[in-house]
Length: 103
Image (tube, rainbow, N blue to C red; front, side, top):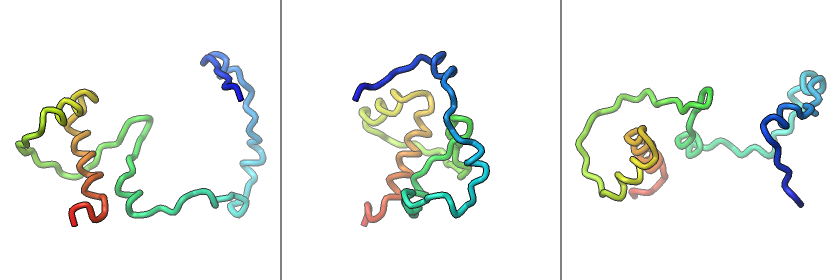
């Protein structure tokens, strides 16, 4: 099967084939939810929330600390952009939320 590619201009000219009248008139019982996985604590703790394409920052209080990191770790996170300190924090949150990792 060949993959068809489009320019942005071509995409904007494509006809919307969604049957919006059908969607508007659907009843809740007509929606098939069978392929949606169960939401677990692991999913809730590791999910990230975006608004308008921007990652929403956690509102938890943060404490400034001095921390010694291997150069490799620091280079990796700094290489990901100016928000490197928050990226380290997010990575640590994900590690802390993993079950039994420190047992």
